Length: 168
Length: 174
Image: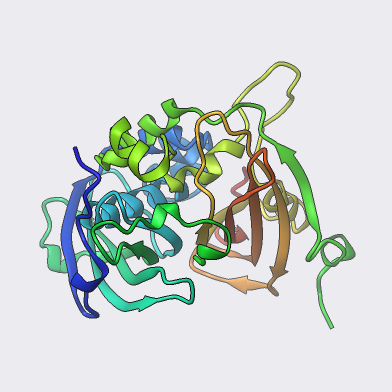
């Protein structure tokens, strides 16, 4: 594996789309994600609690794990030199076992801040539907606005920034 | 005019529940998160990459809140251990048995490394008036959580919007 820059700031333009990522969600996906994030709340592992007490269709993906999925999606595209600055996400409906999660995204801004750090803003959509259903029927379960630092040259490293040089 | 009780208005904007994690940051949780999300980023798997970019291993940024989540059980603890106490305080004050998180903003500062000991504090930013959604009737609230490492360096800020509610159709409780 290599630390070479996979994507440089100059290679990104507003309106650019990220490659789609599709993941079939199982009960294991939900439980593994909840336990990995030390989230012991029963709606993320107990079907009866989720359906009978919370009144939802099944156990569902927890918030920190959704954040981790968004991180994985954007850094798959941008590479290890890319550094997350900020994520803002909104959950509109839950992600349940049996769903297919489809991540799509578009670049909404490319900029350089006052400290000289390059940034891209990305709007990510997480859509869900039955795995066997027509993807055109999927609904957006969550949206995420990501502010991601990218290197502006092969030797630039956003991870080296600290203090006043890091403005997320 | 506000319809909020003093128990709520008196803590808006006030830092509460300063807590220090009871365990050090460890890489095994990075692997759990990476496995759960099938994340192959070499920054978290390859020592040479980590050394070049971050002078050693760091944890995936989105594991930020993980380090302050209490153990499910530990000696001497009674009842359910919860991570975001202000959220549960509000559920109790307003007698709203159910709650969901609707919005989450995370701002990342200094990377978190194995061996770090994280601390955090919670600030209630706002509480809405009564609202009704498809889930039920209740209120929205915004809580900020500030995370620091053992050196006092800011490692991240999380802002949660929660909706505490009572289901309209029957007497569900949690």
